[in-house]
Image (cartoon, rainbow, N blue to C red):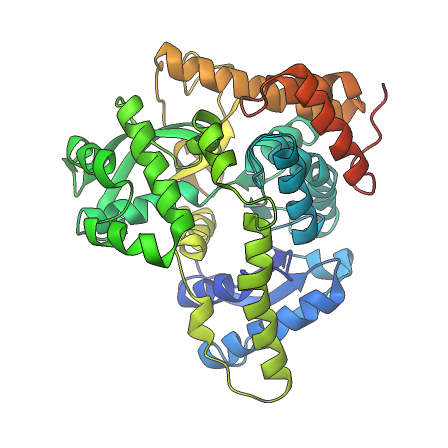
Length: 443
């Protein structure tokens, strides 16, 4: 297919944008006629755009880069819209984390109370993005959405805009697969996995390396070291104690529930007491990002503004962008690549509700994902998923109906919150903190 695409990155001011653009330019088969950045925060986006312009100068000189805060201008005729919204920015993420921790509960970006608060902020802007695309983009546009919390966003958009051309994805399973490849001494593309669950709430059931089943070998390793090599496990003690703690928890879960290999996010739901005890309310993950990656990105942007040299390779890390671009290429060229994506269940997991937004393997075609049937899952995993799916469904209904009662039910049902009274206390604090973002909830 010899087509040149207009690609828009929605959330152009993200600190991940420069790295994603590098991955786009590396995918030579994806010919780009125009690259646009769109954000509602013009100063932030303008700073990031300097980094993106440098990426283009070094890798694809001559490619037009456009920057806009006008949706009609940005989305007009767009073929692909890459959505990476962070509604409220990092300051609101820190508030989410600290409010939950203040009440003795998990404070995390996408899990528990923090994830629900973030979801309530993101639903309306995501629906608005769909409406912009319906009004201005090409008739066969695709939104590739990796805005968090992906499960809540996916469920809300399907409820409100069921015909939207949107594919919801998350890179965390692929990040874990990259760790698996390191353990197994192979390339990421050598692996094929089976997986089921919700976003940040799933399990690897089988791992194949070049067709060979290596699941039991990998389970034995993870039960001892987590998702790192033995050497990396020792190094993490000094280099990154947060990841060391995460992999310690992965080990614990893999030993407690040896049927499958866990997504690392299970630590927040199954080992919440360990996570709360470990987390410093004055130095949450959100605060670490503000003091780390955020500072590095904007310091580099300032250097470029002053005509100083910047090593752009520091922003080209991880498989995040590679995964997103592979999904886009499969949509663009009907490649039918096998990817883990978030889709409406519709019987794929036989004993889960049809309207659950499940994360499972699918073949990505130009018409969208073709989910691979998983079949029935055991009662323990089914029960966990049904509880979380009900929690997320109630939260979406609360946002749509402006219902305090349903929001309280959602917070009460979440595994990270121990009681209805704690749920109410957190919810009331979240309402006050999010009054500029959430819909008003009627009591």
